[in-house]
Image (cartoon, rainbow, N blue to C red):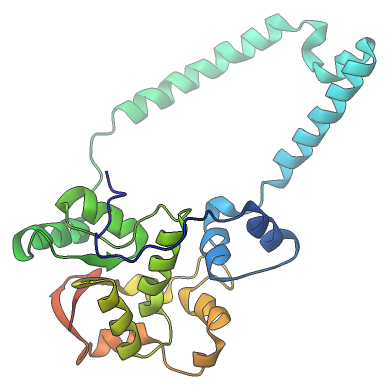
Length: 254
């Protein structure tokens, strides 16, 4: 199970992220590091306007039908029994639908992520079985699942302890000094850090790049250069590059 983490990771008091924080982030524009990690993800965006309209319309028609049975015709527009029309439409639609299914079934292939495969193979062949890894949450899930190496963070972000460790791990994408980030990683007993260049610049929407999140969380360092860019140019003396491909760079924590 990928939720297994490094036994050396410090334990914090158990707590769950509060729903009220996420609601406040939407209504009151309240933001902090944890809420931004959530709300910057596409699945935490607002519901489509058309879906909201039809949902509210459904609720209104349901209330009318409950209060006045005769008004249930608003709730069920097909109450006039257009079964023949409906079945006719479904029959015509099923012809193209079957063609679409045949087309999808004819697609042969498999998920392919060559850079990650190279990373996984390198980890399995070139690191000790007890080597501790840190990095982006999605990547850590793959590392744990495919290599069984200990990890200090993974996508179970609802856990308070995991959130605290992930915040330390994501310090690599902040403007903190390399020494400060290295020292905190050593406190988690991290041996290798998997740096992803895309995470240095990715911006799903305004205010949601890692640098923008960190500038809000850590304004005292906002004038400093991004640590990620510095490590990509030269990771020394606090880190050593031991593996590199088109997507990943593995840094050994010195």
